[in-house]
Image 1 (cartoon, rainbow over the protein chains, first blue to last red):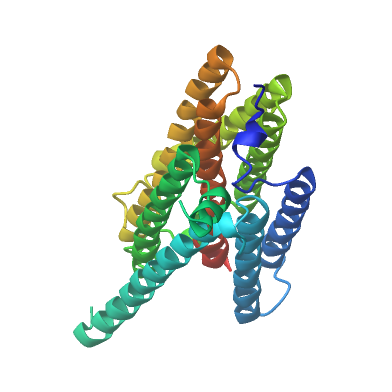
Image 2: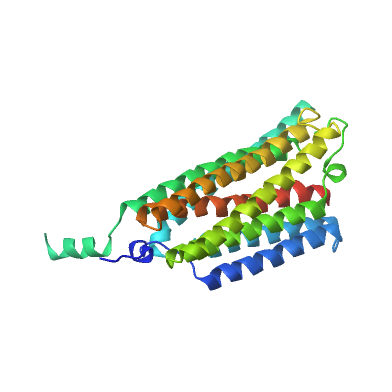
Length: 110
Length: 199
């Protein structure tokens, strides 16, 4: 029996050429915008920080969706739920570290 | 076996290969947490320059932009490689694989050059807490990329010997997960370490 790789892997998600191209172009655009905003100081500092952060979050989502195919379909659903849990842990670690160390700095006058 | 069971079995066919890939995905999630710890450390220590130079003085944004474009393109060519493999186009897959590899090597080369310049001017990881956390975070990412490139060489050899089959496909899928993940970490890296520090 002649089985092609796509027969065997059809239960898992893999993208189309279009999705990779769209993801690639969007990522380039978001990167250009972020670097441009910082290097040419398009806005006030606070607005640049917000803008760059938003660009990063967008590009993250773009690459998760178009390169890693993380969506709410059945097979990648398990990937998605593992991802969401890991992100919960990440948020706790990062936020708590910054918060605790900041409080330490203030209270210990380090 | 009842009809209900039969329906369940026919619609929920899990094969070992998918389980392996999911297991690797869980490893990737643990790697995320590793990087989160390193990012948190950098966030805490990024102002502790011990009187020495900070990000603004040390980092070149045009240089980092080129690095970013190189790694992003290698993530794209990795996607093209997977498409070629799924469509049984062996030669195309090898071309995309080679491109991915060359771009990855360029990225590591640029990063080593940046590190060398910093060291040469005395700005090693021993200079300040800021630089310690910088080298640890960026260095860990670079180490992941380097090991990924080594893995890619081995995979290329295996593909050459065994061709495209379910076993080699599982390996290529896990590699591409790893490679895309590294580009995603780089998005956070260039934003937090390079862009936000130099506003």
